[in-house]
Image 1 (cartoon, one colour):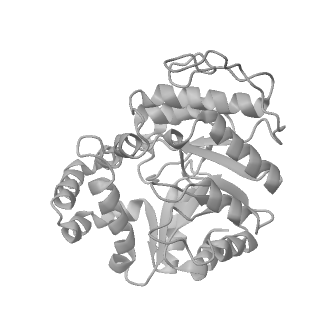
Image 2: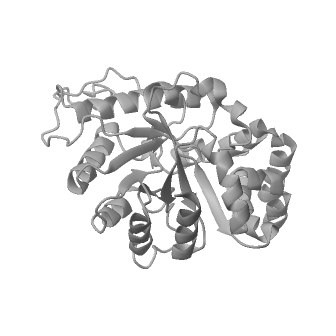
Length: 337
Protein backbone atom coordinates (compact mmCIF):
# COMPACT_ATOMS: atom_id res chain seq x y z
CA UNK A 1 0.00 0.00 0.00
CA UNK A 2 1.27 3.44 -1.02
CA UNK A 3 0.75 6.87 0.50
CA UNK A 4 -0.21 10.06 -1.30
CA UNK A 5 -0.49 13.56 0.12
CA UNK A 6 -3.78 15.29 -0.67
CA UNK A 7 -3.35 19.05 -0.39
CA UNK A 8 -6.86 19.94 -1.49
CA UNK A 9 -7.88 23.37 -2.73
CA UNK A 10 -7.04 26.75 -1.22
CA UNK A 11 -9.21 28.73 1.14
CA UNK A 12 -9.37 32.51 1.02
CA UNK A 13 -5.56 32.68 0.72
CA UNK A 14 -2.96 30.32 -0.72
CA UNK A 15 -0.59 28.52 1.67
CA UNK A 16 2.46 30.61 2.53
CA UNK A 17 4.83 28.58 0.33
CA UNK A 18 2.26 26.93 -1.90
CA UNK A 19 2.56 23.73 0.19
CA UNK A 20 6.05 23.16 -1.20
CA UNK A 21 7.58 22.21 2.17
CA UNK A 22 4.85 19.64 2.82
CA UNK A 23 5.35 18.14 -0.64
CA UNK A 24 9.12 18.02 -0.21
CA UNK A 25 8.74 16.34 3.18
CA UNK A 26 6.35 13.78 1.70
CA UNK A 27 8.85 13.06 -1.07
CA UNK A 28 11.68 12.61 1.44
CA UNK A 29 9.52 10.25 3.53
CA UNK A 30 8.77 7.97 0.59
CA UNK A 31 5.26 9.10 -0.31
CA UNK A 32 4.34 7.97 -3.80
CA UNK A 33 2.33 11.02 -4.88
CA UNK A 34 1.08 14.52 -4.07
CA UNK A 35 -2.33 15.83 -5.19
CA UNK A 36 -4.02 19.19 -5.67
CA UNK A 37 -7.69 20.11 -6.10
CA UNK A 38 -10.01 22.87 -7.32
CA UNK A 39 -13.50 24.04 -6.38
CA UNK A 40 -14.39 27.61 -7.42
CA UNK A 41 -11.21 29.45 -6.47
CA UNK A 42 -7.71 28.33 -7.42
CA UNK A 43 -7.31 26.07 -10.43
CA UNK A 44 -5.84 22.60 -10.01
CA UNK A 45 -2.88 22.70 -12.41
CA UNK A 46 -1.02 25.85 -11.34
CA UNK A 47 -0.28 24.72 -7.74
CA UNK A 48 0.71 21.28 -9.07
CA UNK A 49 3.21 22.80 -11.48
CA UNK A 50 4.56 25.01 -8.67
CA UNK A 51 5.15 21.92 -6.53
CA UNK A 52 6.49 19.88 -9.43
CA UNK A 53 9.19 22.47 -10.07
CA UNK A 54 10.44 22.05 -6.50
CA UNK A 55 10.36 18.26 -6.21
CA UNK A 56 12.15 15.57 -8.19
CA UNK A 57 10.58 12.13 -7.74
CA UNK A 58 7.11 12.29 -6.25
CA UNK A 59 4.20 11.78 -8.66
CA UNK A 60 1.94 14.77 -9.33
CA UNK A 61 -1.81 14.22 -9.38
CA UNK A 62 -4.98 16.24 -9.81
CA UNK A 63 -7.80 15.23 -7.49
CA UNK A 64 -9.79 16.51 -9.07
CA UNK A 65 -9.67 18.53 -12.27
CA UNK A 66 -13.30 19.42 -12.98
CA UNK A 67 -14.21 18.52 -16.55
CA UNK A 68 -16.51 21.52 -16.98
CA UNK A 69 -13.65 23.89 -16.12
CA UNK A 70 -11.90 23.36 -19.45
CA UNK A 71 -12.37 21.58 -22.74
CA UNK A 72 -10.88 18.08 -23.11
CA UNK A 73 -8.10 19.30 -25.39
CA UNK A 74 -7.20 22.17 -23.02
CA UNK A 75 -7.06 19.68 -20.14
CA UNK A 76 -4.86 17.35 -22.19
CA UNK A 77 -2.52 20.28 -22.96
CA UNK A 78 -2.06 21.01 -19.23
CA UNK A 79 -1.44 17.36 -18.40
CA UNK A 80 0.94 16.98 -21.34
CA UNK A 81 2.92 20.06 -20.29
CA UNK A 82 3.30 19.08 -16.62
CA UNK A 83 4.20 15.52 -17.60
CA UNK A 84 6.95 16.76 -19.94
CA UNK A 85 8.33 19.31 -17.47
CA UNK A 86 8.32 16.82 -14.56
CA UNK A 87 9.86 13.93 -16.46
CA UNK A 88 6.77 11.74 -16.51
CA UNK A 89 5.30 12.23 -13.04
CA UNK A 90 1.78 13.39 -13.95
CA UNK A 91 -1.45 11.58 -13.00
CA UNK A 92 -4.59 13.17 -14.42
CA UNK A 93 -7.52 12.86 -12.03
CA UNK A 94 -10.84 14.03 -13.46
CA UNK A 95 -14.33 14.50 -12.05
CA UNK A 96 -17.68 15.98 -13.04
CA UNK A 97 -18.21 17.97 -9.79
CA UNK A 98 -21.92 18.66 -9.17
CA UNK A 99 -24.74 20.61 -10.83
CA UNK A 100 -24.48 23.49 -8.37
CA UNK A 101 -20.88 24.19 -9.44
CA UNK A 102 -21.14 23.13 -13.08
CA UNK A 103 -24.20 25.25 -13.85
CA UNK A 104 -23.62 28.02 -11.30
CA UNK A 105 -19.87 28.59 -11.70
CA UNK A 106 -18.93 27.24 -15.12
CA UNK A 107 -22.21 28.03 -16.87
CA UNK A 108 -22.35 24.55 -18.39
CA UNK A 109 -25.18 21.98 -18.46
CA UNK A 110 -24.82 19.08 -16.05
CA UNK A 111 -27.00 16.54 -17.85
CA UNK A 112 -25.61 13.16 -18.91
CA UNK A 113 -22.44 13.26 -16.75
CA UNK A 114 -21.45 9.67 -17.61
CA UNK A 115 -21.66 10.26 -21.36
CA UNK A 116 -19.77 13.54 -21.04
CA UNK A 117 -17.04 11.80 -19.04
CA UNK A 118 -16.66 9.06 -21.67
CA UNK A 119 -16.24 11.60 -24.45
CA UNK A 120 -13.85 13.68 -22.38
CA UNK A 121 -11.57 10.77 -21.54
CA UNK A 122 -11.56 9.54 -25.13
CA UNK A 123 -10.50 12.96 -26.45
CA UNK A 124 -7.75 13.34 -23.83
CA UNK A 125 -6.42 9.90 -24.77
CA UNK A 126 -6.48 10.84 -28.47
CA UNK A 127 -4.34 13.89 -27.72
CA UNK A 128 -1.85 11.87 -25.69
CA UNK A 129 -1.59 9.02 -28.19
CA UNK A 130 -0.98 11.49 -31.03
CA UNK A 131 -1.83 8.85 -33.64
CA UNK A 132 -3.67 11.34 -35.81
CA UNK A 133 -5.77 14.52 -35.76
CA UNK A 134 -8.20 14.63 -32.85
CA UNK A 135 -11.86 14.38 -33.77
CA UNK A 136 -15.10 13.59 -31.98
CA UNK A 137 -18.65 13.48 -33.32
CA UNK A 138 -20.13 14.77 -30.04
CA UNK A 139 -22.74 15.46 -28.89
CA UNK A 140 -20.98 16.97 -25.86
CA UNK A 141 -17.54 17.90 -27.25
CA UNK A 142 -17.80 17.95 -31.06
CA UNK A 143 -14.47 18.31 -32.83
CA UNK A 144 -14.38 20.13 -35.13
CA UNK A 145 -17.22 22.31 -33.92
CA UNK A 146 -19.93 22.87 -36.55
CA UNK A 147 -22.79 24.17 -34.40
CA UNK A 148 -24.35 27.63 -34.05
CA UNK A 149 -21.85 30.42 -34.63
CA UNK A 150 -19.31 28.21 -36.39
CA UNK A 151 -17.56 29.66 -39.45
CA UNK A 152 -17.19 26.18 -40.92
CA UNK A 153 -13.41 26.35 -41.28
CA UNK A 154 -12.39 24.24 -38.28
CA UNK A 155 -10.36 21.12 -38.95
CA UNK A 156 -9.09 18.27 -36.76
CA UNK A 157 -5.62 18.95 -35.37
CA UNK A 158 -2.84 16.85 -33.88
CA UNK A 159 -0.86 18.12 -30.88
CA UNK A 160 2.24 19.89 -32.14
CA UNK A 161 4.06 19.10 -28.88
CA UNK A 162 4.81 15.41 -28.62
CA UNK A 163 3.50 13.94 -25.34
CA UNK A 164 6.06 12.17 -23.21
CA UNK A 165 3.67 9.27 -22.50
CA UNK A 166 0.74 8.05 -24.54
CA UNK A 167 -0.39 6.07 -21.50
CA UNK A 168 -0.33 8.92 -18.96
CA UNK A 169 -2.58 7.57 -16.16
CA UNK A 170 -6.13 8.88 -16.00
CA UNK A 171 -8.08 8.43 -12.76
CA UNK A 172 -11.71 9.37 -12.23
CA UNK A 173 -13.53 10.61 -9.17
CA UNK A 174 -16.83 8.75 -8.90
CA UNK A 175 -19.46 8.15 -6.22
CA UNK A 176 -22.60 6.69 -7.83
CA UNK A 177 -22.64 2.96 -8.70
CA UNK A 178 -22.95 3.53 -12.47
CA UNK A 179 -20.15 6.09 -12.41
CA UNK A 180 -17.86 3.75 -10.47
CA UNK A 181 -18.60 0.90 -12.89
CA UNK A 182 -17.74 3.17 -15.84
CA UNK A 183 -14.56 4.28 -14.07
CA UNK A 184 -13.44 0.66 -13.70
CA UNK A 185 -14.10 0.14 -17.42
CA UNK A 186 -12.42 3.20 -18.96
CA UNK A 187 -9.91 4.61 -16.45
CA UNK A 188 -6.60 3.61 -14.91
CA UNK A 189 -7.72 4.38 -11.38
CA UNK A 190 -10.51 5.54 -9.09
CA UNK A 191 -10.42 8.45 -6.64
CA UNK A 192 -13.20 7.92 -4.07
CA UNK A 193 -13.80 10.89 -1.78
CA UNK A 194 -15.11 8.45 0.85
CA UNK A 195 -14.14 4.79 0.94
CA UNK A 196 -15.20 2.44 3.69
CA UNK A 197 -12.84 -0.53 4.07
CA UNK A 198 -15.20 -2.01 6.66
CA UNK A 199 -17.98 -2.24 4.04
CA UNK A 200 -16.24 -3.41 0.85
CA UNK A 201 -19.47 -4.89 -0.48
CA UNK A 202 -20.76 -1.40 -1.35
CA UNK A 203 -18.72 -1.26 -4.56
CA UNK A 204 -17.74 -4.91 -5.03
CA UNK A 205 -19.96 -5.46 -8.09
CA UNK A 206 -18.82 -2.26 -9.80
CA UNK A 207 -15.13 -3.10 -9.36
CA UNK A 208 -15.31 -6.77 -10.30
CA UNK A 209 -14.31 -6.21 -13.94
CA UNK A 210 -11.61 -3.58 -13.36
CA UNK A 211 -8.57 -3.99 -15.58
CA UNK A 212 -5.34 -5.46 -14.12
CA UNK A 213 -3.33 -2.81 -12.30
CA UNK A 214 -6.39 -0.66 -11.65
CA UNK A 215 -5.59 1.79 -8.84
CA UNK A 216 -7.92 2.78 -6.01
CA UNK A 217 -6.77 5.88 -4.16
CA UNK A 218 -9.29 7.04 -1.53
CA UNK A 219 -9.08 10.25 0.45
CA UNK A 220 -8.36 9.43 4.12
CA UNK A 221 -8.47 12.05 6.88
CA UNK A 222 -5.66 11.48 9.41
CA UNK A 223 -5.67 12.99 12.89
CA UNK A 224 -3.40 11.53 15.57
CA UNK A 225 -4.72 12.38 19.04
CA UNK A 226 -5.12 10.45 22.29
CA UNK A 227 -8.79 11.48 22.51
CA UNK A 228 -10.67 9.69 19.71
CA UNK A 229 -13.72 11.96 19.90
CA UNK A 230 -11.54 15.06 19.48
CA UNK A 231 -9.54 13.38 16.74
CA UNK A 232 -12.71 12.80 14.73
CA UNK A 233 -13.95 16.40 14.92
CA UNK A 234 -12.07 17.81 11.88
CA UNK A 235 -13.37 14.95 9.75
CA UNK A 236 -16.89 15.45 11.06
CA UNK A 237 -16.70 19.14 10.19
CA UNK A 238 -15.70 18.30 6.62
CA UNK A 239 -18.44 15.67 6.35
CA UNK A 240 -21.08 18.08 7.62
CA UNK A 241 -20.05 20.60 4.94
CA UNK A 242 -20.00 18.10 2.09
CA UNK A 243 -23.08 16.08 3.08
CA UNK A 244 -25.00 19.13 4.23
CA UNK A 245 -24.03 21.88 1.84
CA UNK A 246 -21.73 20.77 -1.01
CA UNK A 247 -24.54 20.36 -3.51
CA UNK A 248 -28.19 21.24 -3.96
CA UNK A 249 -30.75 19.67 -1.65
CA UNK A 250 -32.07 17.36 -4.37
CA UNK A 251 -28.68 16.64 -5.97
CA UNK A 252 -25.98 15.95 -3.38
CA UNK A 253 -23.84 12.96 -4.35
CA UNK A 254 -22.00 12.96 -1.00
CA UNK A 255 -25.25 12.68 0.90
CA UNK A 256 -26.41 9.88 -1.38
CA UNK A 257 -23.16 7.99 -0.82
CA UNK A 258 -23.46 8.29 2.96
CA UNK A 259 -26.97 6.86 2.67
CA UNK A 260 -25.71 3.90 0.61
CA UNK A 261 -23.14 3.23 3.33
CA UNK A 262 -25.97 2.64 5.80
CA UNK A 263 -26.49 6.13 7.24
CA UNK A 264 -29.53 7.40 5.32
CA UNK A 265 -31.42 8.93 8.28
CA UNK A 266 -28.26 10.56 9.61
CA UNK A 267 -27.45 12.03 6.18
CA UNK A 268 -30.94 13.54 5.97
CA UNK A 269 -30.53 15.07 9.42
CA UNK A 270 -27.12 16.53 8.63
CA UNK A 271 -28.44 18.21 5.47
CA UNK A 272 -31.52 19.52 7.26
CA UNK A 273 -29.46 21.10 10.04
CA UNK A 274 -26.79 22.49 7.72
CA UNK A 275 -29.26 24.12 5.36
CA UNK A 276 -31.10 25.63 8.33
CA UNK A 277 -27.89 27.40 9.33
CA UNK A 278 -27.37 25.15 12.37
CA UNK A 279 -23.90 24.10 11.32
CA UNK A 280 -22.49 23.15 14.72
CA UNK A 281 -25.45 20.84 15.24
CA UNK A 282 -24.87 19.38 11.78
CA UNK A 283 -21.29 18.53 12.77
CA UNK A 284 -22.48 16.84 15.96
CA UNK A 285 -25.07 14.88 13.92
CA UNK A 286 -22.30 13.14 11.95
CA UNK A 287 -22.01 9.70 13.61
CA UNK A 288 -18.61 9.04 15.16
CA UNK A 289 -18.77 5.53 13.72
CA UNK A 290 -19.14 6.77 10.14
CA UNK A 291 -16.38 9.38 10.48
CA UNK A 292 -14.16 6.71 12.04
CA UNK A 293 -14.77 4.08 9.36
CA UNK A 294 -13.54 6.29 6.51
CA UNK A 295 -10.58 7.88 8.33
CA UNK A 296 -7.53 7.09 10.44
CA UNK A 297 -7.95 8.83 13.78
CA UNK A 298 -7.00 8.41 17.41
CA UNK A 299 -3.83 7.30 19.18
CA UNK A 300 -0.93 6.04 17.08
CA UNK A 301 -1.31 2.47 18.32
CA UNK A 302 -4.97 2.43 17.27
CA UNK A 303 -4.17 3.83 13.82
CA UNK A 304 -1.44 1.22 13.34
CA UNK A 305 -3.95 -1.51 14.13
CA UNK A 306 -6.67 -0.10 11.85
CA UNK A 307 -4.23 0.29 8.97
CA UNK A 308 -4.43 -3.47 8.52
CA UNK A 309 -8.08 -3.15 7.44
CA UNK A 310 -6.98 -0.76 4.68
CA UNK A 311 -4.16 -3.09 3.64
CA UNK A 312 -6.68 -5.92 3.33
CA UNK A 313 -9.02 -3.77 1.22
CA UNK A 314 -8.79 -3.16 -2.55
CA UNK A 315 -7.27 0.30 -1.92
CA UNK A 316 -3.79 0.66 -3.41
CA UNK A 317 -2.90 4.21 -2.25
CA UNK A 318 -4.19 6.23 0.69
CA UNK A 319 -4.41 9.95 -0.09
CA UNK A 320 -3.91 11.33 3.40
CA UNK A 321 -5.08 14.74 4.49
CA UNK A 322 -4.96 16.29 7.94
CA UNK A 323 -4.10 19.26 10.10
CA UNK A 324 -0.88 17.99 11.65
CA UNK A 325 1.48 19.35 9.01
CA UNK A 326 4.94 17.84 8.72
CA UNK A 327 4.60 15.86 11.95
CA UNK A 328 1.45 14.15 10.70
CA UNK A 329 3.30 13.10 7.54
CA UNK A 330 6.17 11.69 9.58
CA UNK A 331 3.83 9.83 11.90
CA UNK A 332 1.72 8.24 9.18
CA UNK A 333 4.83 7.32 7.17
CA UNK A 334 6.27 5.62 10.25
CA UNK A 335 3.05 3.66 10.73
CA UNK A 336 2.20 2.80 7.14
CA UNK A 337 5.37 2.59 5.06
